[in-house]
Image 1: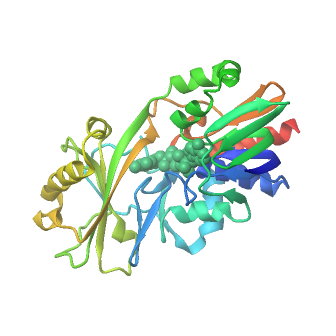
Image 2: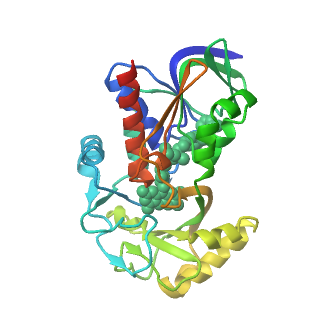
Image 3: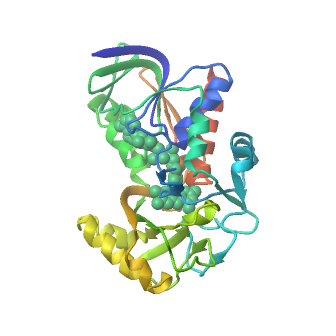
Length: 340
Ligand SMILES: Cc1cc2nc3c(=O)[nH]c(=O)nc-3n(C[C@H](O)[C@H](O)[C@H](O)COP(=O)(O)OP(=O)(O)OC[C@H]3O[C@@H](n4cnc5c(N)ncnc54)[C@H](O)[C@@H]3O)c2cc1C
């Protein structure tokens, strides 16, 4: 059993957790991050195939916060494709309301959105493939456990998606002490999303759009032209994202079944040739994003039996989405430093 004792520990190295840890590090505080996956970034997810980097979670960055964009520009520099999606077809709803509002800056990243997560993670200690399955308080300290490890800490920051965070607060002592936080999570509504990456080696043509928002499709919310973020590639690749209700209804269907259905739904929009991709990768996001009605004004910071508990993520900032996740992490770090 590996044991560690630290001052501050974070569960989850998505954008919220990384933004928190980076802000703390800039002020000279070390944070240990525990991440279930091999990669950092969570739903800011990019898959690499041949010479293509394809986003299969959030498809592009958007937001109004100067701090958010200053960080993106500073970390990514010339690889920020400012203004992407340049060409939008269709009037269907975007994932986040006002994502394409002319007053809101938007951008993709050459190399995939996950490169933002990787840059935020530089210099931070992250234990990957480390799933926390139990949290409790013992002798005035947090105790986090999982397969083969035990971490104790004074301050715990929960930066997992909402249902996952709620599940982690199930221990009987915590369930009572953190009842306020649990009640807040109960108010959120997560939206499911089935997403499908497809790639064509020798397409007959490339579409004249970067983002397609079909109004009439009952299944497809959007198709992003991932290859348009990678100008040098001759291949054509898309990420097809299904609508929340359609995705929810198919959670128990086999992957082959819903993949086939999505390809058939996309064919009238793309052309019959699109029915036979050279490569594909389906992904099931159980908690893709929150219903936009479910947002709080700021991160949660609570004292439980003398131990500090911080909770962050897209729900904990009015901006919501990825920008909200980033800002919630920054704001929690600021709050914590004020209380030190
Ligand atoms: C298909 C899709 C489309 C989207 N579209 C948009 C959009 O258009 N605009 C927008 O702004 N946002 C969009 N989003 C939402 C956006 O991606 C999220 O709001 C944002 O990335 C959330 O970041 P986070 O750090 O709060 O959570 P996450 O990214 O979920 O990070 C949480 C991390 O915690 C880890 N974790 C969870 N449980 C444990 C555990 N027990 N132990 C250790 N680690 C754990 C996870 O592995 C994960 O890495 C989309 C998301 C998806 C999936």
